[in-house]
Length: 160
Image 1 (spheres, one colour):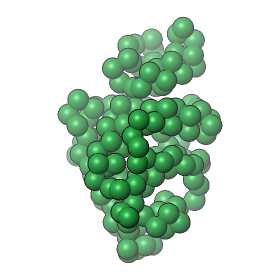
Image 2 (tube, rainbow, N blue to C red; image 1 turned 180 degrees about the vertical axis):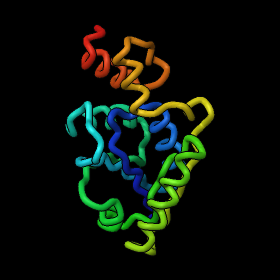
Image 3 (spheres, helix red, strand yellow; image 1 turned 30 degrees about the vertical axis):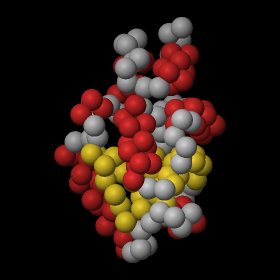
Image 4 (spheres, rainbow, N blue to C red; image 1 turned 30 degrees about the horizontal axis):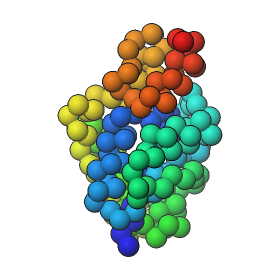
């Protein structure tokens, strides 16, 4: 069975993340979405909230499983016998960081490939940080995130 992991903090999950997950699930027999429990950046949502939103957003994709993890991503991939780590690229500036991560991961685990999927055009400008900023400033986010995320952001920023 070909297995890939799709790791991120998902703080919160966007329609861009959902798009990458759908496309990766089409390529691989099993996709394990890893919600990283200890990212460096400041989080708006707890691990439990991020996990629940990710599960809800991806529930209709049959070969996707969602798990939390901490530690090295390559270790998470190795634990699940994954052959690939999925990364989404929105723009050229993402490439440098993803290339650096890919090369580093390859030194740690040469058998695991990094597979980068280009963002679909309609989602190429979306990031979790921008989504949160728009919500914080009372902008319309309905077309940027799954309904569960829109509701959670409105609650966080007292928009409802």
